[in-house]
Length: 160
Picture 1 (spheres, rainbow, N blue to C red):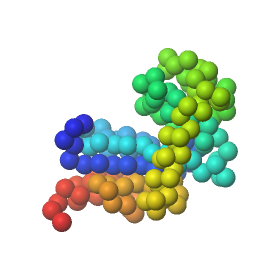
Picture 2 (cartoon, rainbow, N blue to C red):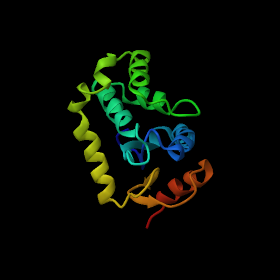
Picture 3 (cartoon, rainbow, N blue to C red):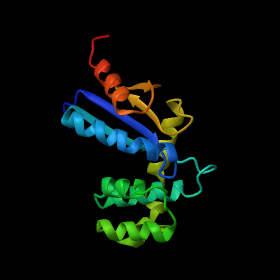
Protein backbone atom coordinates (compact mmCIF):
# COMPACT_ATOMS: atom_id res chain seq x y z
CA UNK A 1 0.00 0.00 0.00
CA UNK A 2 2.97 2.29 0.20
CA UNK A 3 2.82 4.81 -2.57
CA UNK A 4 -0.94 4.48 -3.10
CA UNK A 5 -2.26 7.39 -5.14
CA UNK A 6 -5.64 7.46 -3.46
CA UNK A 7 -6.92 7.30 0.09
CA UNK A 8 -10.42 6.47 1.19
CA UNK A 9 -11.38 6.74 4.86
CA UNK A 10 -14.71 5.59 6.23
CA UNK A 11 -16.02 6.59 9.63
CA UNK A 12 -18.62 3.98 10.42
CA UNK A 13 -20.28 1.67 12.86
CA UNK A 14 -20.98 -2.03 12.61
CA UNK A 15 -24.63 -1.68 13.60
CA UNK A 16 -25.38 1.16 11.16
CA UNK A 17 -27.64 0.02 8.30
CA UNK A 18 -26.16 2.66 5.97
CA UNK A 19 -22.63 1.43 6.67
CA UNK A 20 -23.82 -2.10 5.99
CA UNK A 21 -25.16 -0.90 2.59
CA UNK A 22 -21.93 0.99 1.86
CA UNK A 23 -19.69 -2.02 2.56
CA UNK A 24 -20.20 -3.85 -0.78
CA UNK A 25 -19.79 -0.54 -2.62
CA UNK A 26 -16.48 0.16 -0.90
CA UNK A 27 -15.39 -3.46 -1.41
CA UNK A 28 -16.00 -3.13 -5.17
CA UNK A 29 -14.13 0.18 -5.34
CA UNK A 30 -11.24 -1.40 -3.46
CA UNK A 31 -11.27 -4.36 -5.84
CA UNK A 32 -11.22 -2.10 -8.90
CA UNK A 33 -8.44 0.16 -7.67
CA UNK A 34 -6.24 -2.45 -6.01
CA UNK A 35 -2.90 -1.07 -4.82
CA UNK A 36 -3.73 2.40 -6.14
CA UNK A 37 -6.05 2.85 -3.13
CA UNK A 38 -5.40 2.72 0.59
CA UNK A 39 -8.57 2.24 2.64
CA UNK A 40 -8.97 2.90 6.35
CA UNK A 41 -11.98 2.16 8.51
CA UNK A 42 -12.36 4.43 11.54
CA UNK A 43 -14.77 3.58 14.33
CA UNK A 44 -17.64 5.98 14.89
CA UNK A 45 -20.11 3.93 16.95
CA UNK A 46 -23.30 5.89 17.55
CA UNK A 47 -24.10 4.10 20.80
CA UNK A 48 -27.23 6.15 21.49
CA UNK A 49 -28.77 4.82 18.27
CA UNK A 50 -27.03 1.46 18.05
CA UNK A 51 -26.62 -0.26 21.43
CA UNK A 52 -24.21 -2.93 20.14
CA UNK A 53 -22.01 -0.69 17.99
CA UNK A 54 -19.42 0.02 20.67
CA UNK A 55 -18.97 -3.61 21.70
CA UNK A 56 -18.60 -4.56 18.02
CA UNK A 57 -15.99 -1.84 17.50
CA UNK A 58 -13.88 -2.95 20.44
CA UNK A 59 -14.25 -6.59 19.33
CA UNK A 60 -12.84 -5.59 15.92
CA UNK A 61 -9.92 -3.82 17.58
CA UNK A 62 -9.32 -6.80 19.85
CA UNK A 63 -9.22 -9.02 16.75
CA UNK A 64 -6.74 -6.53 15.27
CA UNK A 65 -4.39 -7.30 18.15
CA UNK A 66 -4.26 -10.82 16.71
CA UNK A 67 -3.82 -9.52 13.16
CA UNK A 68 -7.43 -10.27 12.27
CA UNK A 69 -9.13 -6.86 11.96
CA UNK A 70 -10.25 -7.27 8.34
CA UNK A 71 -11.66 -10.78 8.77
CA UNK A 72 -13.60 -9.53 11.82
CA UNK A 73 -14.71 -6.41 9.92
CA UNK A 74 -16.01 -8.64 7.13
CA UNK A 75 -17.79 -10.93 9.57
CA UNK A 76 -19.39 -8.06 11.53
CA UNK A 77 -20.87 -6.63 8.32
CA UNK A 78 -21.99 -10.01 6.93
CA UNK A 79 -25.66 -10.84 6.59
CA UNK A 80 -28.74 -8.73 6.19
CA UNK A 81 -29.12 -7.79 9.85
CA UNK A 82 -26.38 -7.14 12.37
CA UNK A 83 -25.88 -9.82 14.99
CA UNK A 84 -23.60 -8.19 17.52
CA UNK A 85 -24.39 -9.59 20.96
CA UNK A 86 -21.52 -10.91 23.08
CA UNK A 87 -22.20 -14.52 22.07
CA UNK A 88 -22.19 -13.50 18.39
CA UNK A 89 -18.85 -11.71 18.82
CA UNK A 90 -17.35 -14.76 20.50
CA UNK A 91 -18.60 -16.96 17.65
CA UNK A 92 -17.10 -14.68 15.01
CA UNK A 93 -13.78 -14.75 16.86
CA UNK A 94 -13.77 -18.54 16.76
CA UNK A 95 -14.58 -18.46 13.02
CA UNK A 96 -11.58 -16.25 12.28
CA UNK A 97 -9.20 -18.06 14.62
CA UNK A 98 -9.09 -15.62 17.54
CA UNK A 99 -9.53 -16.52 21.21
CA UNK A 100 -13.21 -15.70 21.80
CA UNK A 101 -12.62 -14.28 25.27
CA UNK A 102 -10.30 -11.59 23.89
CA UNK A 103 -13.09 -9.88 21.90
CA UNK A 104 -15.51 -9.27 24.78
CA UNK A 105 -15.37 -7.27 27.98
CA UNK A 106 -13.32 -7.18 30.18
CA UNK A 107 -10.49 -8.14 27.79
CA UNK A 108 -11.51 -5.38 25.36
CA UNK A 109 -10.57 -2.71 27.90
CA UNK A 110 -7.11 -2.95 26.35
CA UNK A 111 -8.36 -1.50 23.04
CA UNK A 112 -11.15 0.86 24.09
CA UNK A 113 -8.79 3.81 23.69
CA UNK A 114 -8.32 2.97 19.98
CA UNK A 115 -12.07 3.19 19.37
CA UNK A 116 -12.28 6.40 21.38
CA UNK A 117 -9.38 7.90 19.40
CA UNK A 118 -11.14 7.10 16.10
CA UNK A 119 -14.38 8.62 17.37
CA UNK A 120 -12.63 11.79 18.59
CA UNK A 121 -10.78 12.09 15.27
CA UNK A 122 -14.14 11.90 13.49
CA UNK A 123 -15.64 14.60 15.69
CA UNK A 124 -12.65 16.86 14.98
CA UNK A 125 -13.08 16.17 11.25
CA UNK A 126 -16.76 17.14 11.31
CA UNK A 127 -18.27 13.65 11.22
CA UNK A 128 -21.86 13.73 12.41
CA UNK A 129 -23.26 10.48 11.07
CA UNK A 130 -22.29 7.22 9.48
CA UNK A 131 -20.97 6.38 7.07
CA UNK A 132 -18.90 9.47 6.46
CA UNK A 133 -16.27 9.11 3.74
CA UNK A 134 -13.15 11.11 2.99
CA UNK A 135 -11.42 10.97 -0.39
CA UNK A 136 -7.77 12.05 -0.20
CA UNK A 137 -8.55 14.01 2.95
CA UNK A 138 -11.67 15.77 1.67
CA UNK A 139 -15.19 14.97 2.80
CA UNK A 140 -17.14 13.06 0.18
CA UNK A 141 -20.72 14.32 -0.05
CA UNK A 142 -21.93 12.23 -2.98
CA UNK A 143 -24.06 9.14 -3.25
CA UNK A 144 -22.39 6.01 -1.88
CA UNK A 145 -22.52 4.04 -5.12
CA UNK A 146 -19.67 2.47 -7.06
CA UNK A 147 -19.70 4.76 -10.11
CA UNK A 148 -20.07 7.96 -8.09
CA UNK A 149 -17.35 7.01 -5.64
CA UNK A 150 -15.04 5.94 -8.47
CA UNK A 151 -15.65 9.30 -10.16
CA UNK A 152 -14.77 11.16 -6.96
CA UNK A 153 -11.59 9.14 -6.54
CA UNK A 154 -10.54 9.67 -10.15
CA UNK A 155 -11.24 13.39 -9.79
CA UNK A 156 -8.94 13.41 -6.76
CA UNK A 157 -6.08 12.42 -9.08
CA UNK A 158 -6.47 15.61 -11.09
CA UNK A 159 -4.21 18.55 -10.25
CA UNK A 160 -5.90 21.17 -8.10
